[in-house]
Image (cartoon, rainbow, N blue to C red; front, side, top):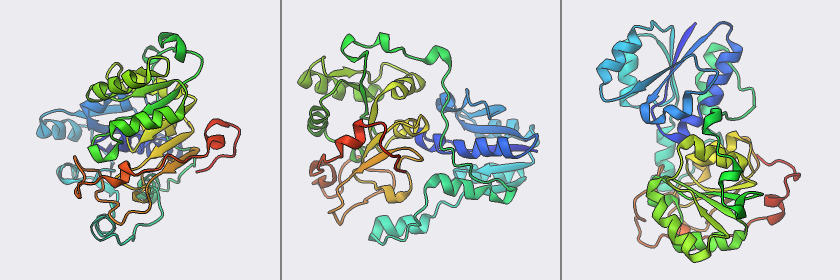
Length: 329
């Protein structure tokens, strides 16, 4: 059997599809797995040993369809379910399994705060998509694979961070999914241990503000300095990971790190919380306006941003620092 998996974006969503890839490969004898995503996310799939061939969307959808048609797939698994993936399925004309995005339940939850969301993680909804193939969830969680030359040794970090550090994935695609800079400073001060700040080049300036306020002994600003997989290697070596609702949070879950996840305009009930790893959720549950979006906004629709501005940094220190404490999923 030759199977094509479709998922075009983004970092976290692609990482969340990895149990599907692994379970298909391990449970279907002789299966050949192909995966198609945007080229910018190549790092997330190229080293996955369960993927036999990668395909990438560049500028031309017709060119991609022509390439995929030549592969003569038996089955297509659509884990994105948008206009583009539905068009690809139509043009290829093969048997397809498509994820249920439960858009009605999400709309009711976000628009009217009617919580009709099933208590099911998005990974389990992805796995439900392939149950017709007789494939079941092996319960092993997420995968993420890094090549040896992408590993950043701790010896490359400042001396103050070489023995132990906390990773803080401070980025976020939308403004309402991450703390304002003054609250980031407050959180880093509360953590009180050497911290590596992780994000892309757009986060570097904010990271510099934090470093300037708290000093080089506490803060190493790695935002924009490393690739996705190099940043992932720093996540893997961290003692603990603090993260907003962002892609590195799911990479941290793939490495079974202890995670403190910080939530603003989105909520864990949308099914994207850390999967199969020890984690704590920090959120403001006393607001009737949350969630205001499935994916976040560029600014608070009501102008007050209370979900982050009034967030209390209360977490169980023993849970965070004691690696022997019982796992909580």
